[in-house]
Image (spheres, rainbow, N blue to C red):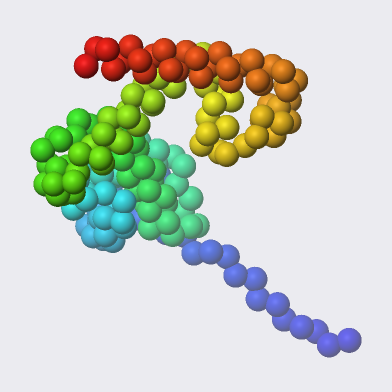
Length: 187
């Protein structure tokens, strides 16, 4: 039998990650200088340019706060991009509640934009109505209308009797219609 030399390699230790993990503040500055532009470019995939610097800053703050999770055997950039992705998504979720200027939308869609605006208003009313429903009613309506499931499929998925699904849907739709009607009266 021939002797075969097998070379075992281990991942090199990333000194910058190691210093960061130990709490060396100068390592954070070095990481920002070395990887900041790449992280910012990555963030731009998710958020507009005008908001990228805020997300970049949040990313490096989060990296500093969670430095004990750093693995010096893995590339620092991978950790940075993972944090950047999460912060970008969080940033977008916060923006979801921003008020939209109807005049700006009209400019974007032209003179026939009333239909688009009406759809947006209707969607907002439906969303508020759904949010006001009890969870069990909201769940069956969302599965039926947004996930396109039949009542039988909903019953299987939620492990409920079919009659329960039908009753929850009927009560939920009645409450939803009542809520939307109240919204329209208030306008």
